Length: 595
Image (cartoon, rainbow, N blue to C red; front, side, top):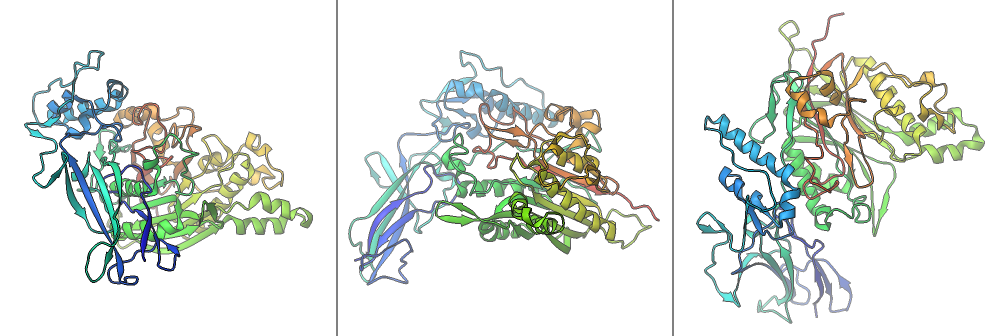
């Protein structure tokens, strides 16, 4: 007889908006074990599986800490209530939690006060500094939201002070806001197809309490061309003006690398792919970029998730996977670079794929003696790739003197080798990519954008090559060159007028945009203090370079700093689902001079 052997959930904490997909292990009448579904339409010997989901609502009212969503709240910020900040953001699990989160939390009060002033109302001090007597908070022995209990008493059948609401009848279930603070129950039972009655006992599993999806403070676009303009990104309207376009670059952290061994500080539920993919999608879609360059995108996640989901938002997708696979437990996965562009803003003209392995083969064939070829390939073949696409804009900022002139832009998206000891390989990969882009630029005089995770810090040889077009022959990185592929150093040049977009914060030298960001930029390199932040490393590895002769930077997505990340944490976190941060720049095409 068909029977259920085991039921369990891969994630220990359910989150609003993240699908729950139970693992159900079954045994057939012939004693073979399987995990496939058995619907009523395809019974096995007259038996099928019936699923139900319940929300368990008790008399006890529960609220969730806004900082630690897996913890129940014990106090509430009265300043938030007075300022009419969303009530969910006012709860904390302990006085220490409230104190530690104050630098982040007070931003909510400042923005609320600013909004009041902009509406012409009298400014009012709504929140004092936190002090040891907790004068700004109240204990939540019995929480209410106004005069209405947070979770009103249910009017249905009750059992021992609990009420069970049926909320779903499929194998999977996606928690909603109504489920926050409640335990869910999954029930699986074998049913007779004729009588529709259960056969044998039901198998059930209870979840932890449902928590809201964490919502980090939105990052703003800050103008560097008009320093008095600071704009919020929102889904209701585009901030970009006519004739400009935005480019996003983001290493999203492949699931195959997101292990609890590497990121033990991140809660397991926040590290799980079902949660991270939804959080990443919300973040990426929220930026509303015209062009999106992602790195570390697994091939199956591109096909099954990112491509169809971003298609719903008007994006065309391109993908180049790495040339080697990664074994992860029982699965073999492969990641790569994905580039998306908005169909209403651009059309594709041409695509190029760069496999550094093929370039390594050509290099060793030409320069390396046959006796050393195997050693050379072992060092150079690292499976990294780049994806280059030439796009044509469907908008124009050309004047009447150039009616109908095509506006092309070339976008390169790459992920350079990560191994720090292979400095020669990193530099060779970057040089190889730039030489290919030189050929494209020479053939069509196209503005260039070079985006990605270069796994190279500011001041390194790859960064110098990108930013100033050459490498100092005495640069310390050139000391690592066992194959002689970097000699002579004078060949390490390119003619593309590339500039790092985020160095614009330093170049404007003042104004509102610079003042807001100067604490987040390294004055020695004019690059962000970090784009990658883990417990073991904090520094800048990601860049957006552009050709300064044909493009100008209008605005930049604000950087994160220590206040933006919660105290004593690192990435990924419940709020930010990658160990990298996204970079985004808004560009305008410069008028081309006639030759």
